[in-house]
Length: 428
Figure 1 (spheres, rainbow, N blue to C red):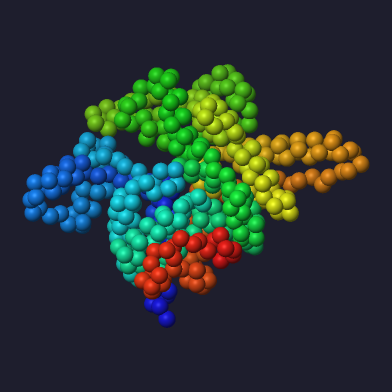
Figure 2: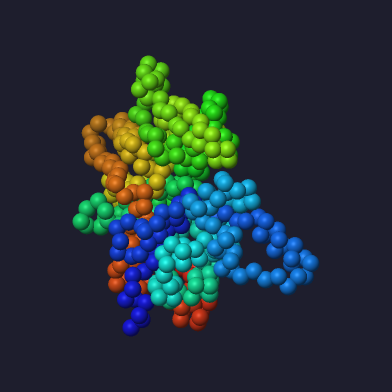
């Protein structure tokens, strides 16, 4: 028996905005940190200079990792206090953009945060539903070659959110997962555990766009926010004060009639001088999340509302699965936890479905009465890290080790074994 199977597997969900990590069997991740790294530019420049002049100066990886390479909140804090540290995001729009940075990021996650030996644990990593097979190969090479893990499984993020089975005692494996992360939004239909790959929809509006829109609104209004701090303030405003309204015109009127009731105050400290400042938080409280329902207020490049995208996704799925898909629309990701987001989404989606049913009855005649279509959007208290929780549930089952790629298989067949994803073949 493999001794590594007696220890809990490591579950790491790398998102564009945040990384959730912990051990299988837990309900919540041990750590949730921003997926960002800070690199000491002076160290990098010094290393380049030494290489050009053929000096024999050597730098160990541990020195680089501990002193000149920081991740998460530490990276953000260091970059704000020191100009020699440059922030970089290794994942963009759900895809790894900087593999060297990603490798070092995983290194610090394993050794500095989880404090475990990767050779003693199986690993479950998550990936975007549209990840290229080559990216899986790179991930496999890093995990098996650099960290020498005994086993690895890469799971599709929306399927894990559905597989979590958090709504009922029975795990419902038919539904539509609306995964709204920081760098991308995916609508993925799943029928009896099978991903309907041809019906996957991906839209270019995500949590980061909400942050950028809030930042733009506050800048255009002339709020007194330091430029180097504006994005971070906008992100915190989004997470603390934003909510979804039922009618945008009524919401404007409410704010205009009682500004003292709805306008909030933000107080901060300038990172470089230490001086305090304050600013008002007004219309952006409800205009931020509104980009999902009226995207034209943010950009003219993409104008299809999220409910219409979900409806189009279900309509391209096999006809015998559509009722079950409408009945179980599952939300996942931090950008779906705005207050009343699920109610607005369910209302707008139901309007589209009911209008289609009425149009069909009018065309075919009243004698052909159709059954109403039930629309249900599922919301829950752990949807921010539903993907990680689904991975924790999966990795704690005995079947998990059967679908893992092992070190022996990697040594025999190479990185090509990581190209295939068992999720697309069927149930775990």
